[in-house]
Image (cartoon, rainbow, N blue to C red):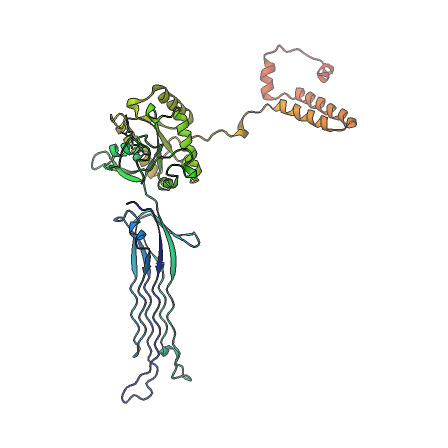
Length: 420
Ligand SMILES: Nc1nc2c(ncn2[C@@H]2O[C@H](COP(=O)(O)OP(=O)(O)OP(=O)(O)O)[C@@H](O)[C@H]2O)c(=O)[nH]1
Ligand SMILES: [Mg+2]
């Protein structure tokens, strides 16, 4: 079972109480205070481990209590410290404080160790309260309680490449072709219910390289509103370096337009809000063995226009699978070394940047202003328009120069020019 979220309550051990005792011994009159201190309570420690890959063990044991410190004893004996607990979490776990929502720690590498809840300090025994004027103190302290926290653990898979797309496009088939992962593959939507990881190896020893690919459940239109399996699985590809967007170019999908499929998925990625739509992306036209040539050509053209690298593959016949494996590997290598300069998606043109006819706009504004002004001021408004027109002819813009350049030039007198 793949469990990627768990809530746990941790109680660090309380400190032991300080002791109140007096030394009583033959031939030692007024032995003085001899109460020992209480022991410290045990801490709760969290440690990341490569050997764990789910949070399932937390789901079924949601409470952890460390041992409390023993109380201090007579003859100045300090109590024993409480034993702590070490909780092992998989690499990629993020720990949140469930009450405040703030991140307590992000376990992004293995053998990372932090104290998640501190044990309480032991109380001081009465030996500490003796002074020259107060030689038989009966004061002693109680142990401090240990920290108690409610935590939420979230596991984000650490993969280099994420596979996204509609259900049934062949994501699981592809990961099973390029890695040793064996996810369930079937001819119906939502076969994959939990993310799968696959390690892809390229090259030969000693130059062998590998990267991790994550196959997540398919997305559909409205996934951000909870349609299908929702978009919560997208957090597993939040940290990937590259997305491979698979689009079915065969007629098996039952959807007419592959470009629309692509845009729907991009919309869902954008609605997740982690900038997934701006990640470097490779588009794959899947099921090329049974492709509809029109769909394939349309998607290819769209990708070329928008600057996405495109490749058509067939996971069944193996067409282009090796090429895809190596080109993804090359991008991952460049990204790991920080030298990636490949194509990134082009931003969409914004409405503001669309060309506007400046002159037509000016004219309309002037007309509007003239219509609004009272009759006695209208004359001056129209005068102003005429003036502006004159000044435009006197200082022609670069664009207009071109248009007039074609016409034969006539020499005009100053008077004529002013009238125009
Ligand atoms: N003809 C052909 N069929 C393919 C190809 N790749 C996958 N299929 C078939 O498409 C169907 C769906 O494949 P899956 O790998 O389960 O698809 P998926 O994207 O993982 O689907 P979900 O897990 O539901 O999101 C299976 O019946 C595969 O045999 C391909 O390249 N060519
Ligand atoms: Mg699948």
